[in-house]
Length: 261
Length: 281
Image (cartoon, rainbow over all chains, first blue to last red; front, side, top):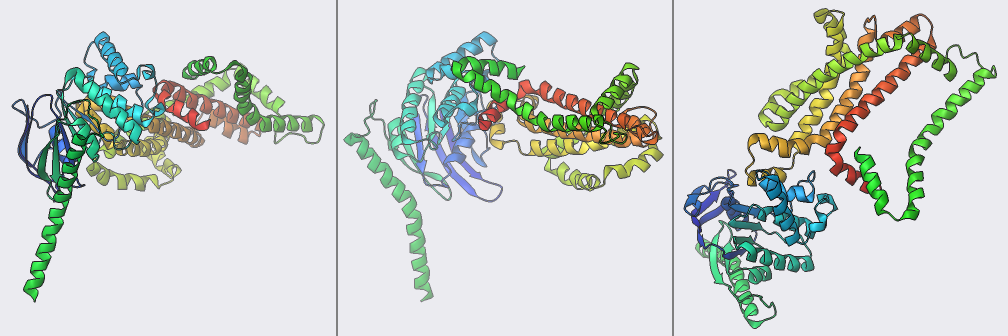
């Protein structure tokens, strides 16, 4: 169980990125996080990954507080971030260098076959397309067998076809070992297609605005009425999450105007 | 080695009829580059043979070759070349070690960069030859002052290259290292070193170039051996062929040592090499 307990983050430059975020994610659950820019989605993910320390509250995995990157927590970034001086196989093996050679090779081969890039094992990252590079990044994150996999807008730089393809791929990989997935995304359809639960966040400071259950039976048909109903709920919540902020501002300005008269 | 391997692989992968074309391409580059110097050399040789010029001040290739063989045969050329090579090697080594350490520190820490870099940049602005009188006063006329001058010349390009390379390592790649919980030493070995290596090789090569430049300056300040001594000796005794011979020896040694750096680091830079050749095509 992954638990965020009243997590807040204020950056040294004074930006209040996250406030009072509490969340429990069961093992094997897929949670999507959507929200406008500046709502602290990435900050939250970085706190879970142990890359940034929260200013307040704590992140805990199975009761253990996370303060630094943890072997059971993997992360996939928006960019593949492959190491250009390692081959594809070398990149996938990057996180399991401590394992004995035969086991390492076997795991890498399995992972590459699983993402459909077995024939690219000896290629250099520069020779890959964007989608292929991101698949290598997925393989690299999965190969150590994480219990929690964090994804920070992992498919946002890809074209629509590649994106849909990789979403299916991700689900298939998830089904192998069922890690907990936390997916930050801008793409509402992506959230509904993948997640059991969708968190809508609101900005300044970032906090959870609404939680929407989205656990449609798989495989999910994006053209079904149920899918559409959830899509409308999420879009509606997103609208409100952003509108309420501006609505408050307008009300305050009106109030000021009244006083000044 | 890497080139041989990859070109062999390339040939087997390509359709057969493209082979003559790619071989021609491979020859054309160096052959074209040789065209001008060979024509010039042959022309000058011919001009001297035909009596259009005495060739006393500008000796024709045949005379230079004779001098070269004669000096090499007596072992004098080797004696001087080894003296020069030793100075370059020691000075280059010292300059590279200090330049690498100081460059890595200032590239890594912005505090050290603000502390040291202004002073070093000011020192860099001094033409290094200007140090010669001081070095002679401090270190005497023999090897120490020569090697120090070379080391100073090598230090700056290596320092600048390493500092720039370390400071510009991609933060996002470093974060990948953090995610996989690399220790400090592992981070250096598995992320920082490979990331800075391409710039480091360039820094080493420009440092070596300056090393060869400064060894001549160093040997001009009074040496009893070395290729620079051959130059001065040739000038004072009016032997232009000996001067040109020494110059040719400099060119050969400079090229070989530069090639050694390239060859030694090429296996580690294959990923970049592949990219460069893609770009060229």
